[in-house]
Amino acid sequence: TATRKPPDTLLRGRTDDLFREYFPRLVRLLSPVLRDRPLAEDLAQETMSRFLVRLDRLDTSTPVWPWLKTVAMRLAIDHLRRGAREVPYQPQEVVVDENAGAREDTYWCEEGPELVAALRDLPKRQRQALALRYLHDRDPADVARALNLSKGALDQLVFRARRNMSRRYAPISRDA
Picture (cartoon, one colour):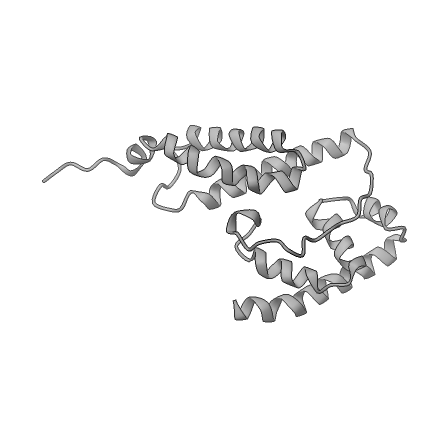
């Protein structure tokens, strides 16, 4: 019988191919989150570096992309949190791209297209509150100030937005 190489050896021999395949996808994933392509490239490279360092300990029988996405998004969130402490928050209008494609690598989760569709149906103010609070991971007090609301009014707005999202998202995700 022929001897088979263990999966990690097979994977290790393909590191250049893996980098060529996943690095651009990671950059496309991180660029809109960070709004800085060079920084997205740096974090994508850091993600790939962590992947290669941990290659011996990872289960290579499972898909690589979910692990890479998770690590990349955590690195981006950590970076944004550090930046939020260093730079004062300047509110910006939250825009949901109405023409966004449904490519898998542009979303943070597999249900991205359905989430975008449900978000698109929300009133603008609710969409802004959800985006600032959860996508941009802002403190509720900062979000309330940015939207010129009291803390209680923001809590109500976020509650309504989450309720509306669950009503809109559940039928869309069931049909998908």
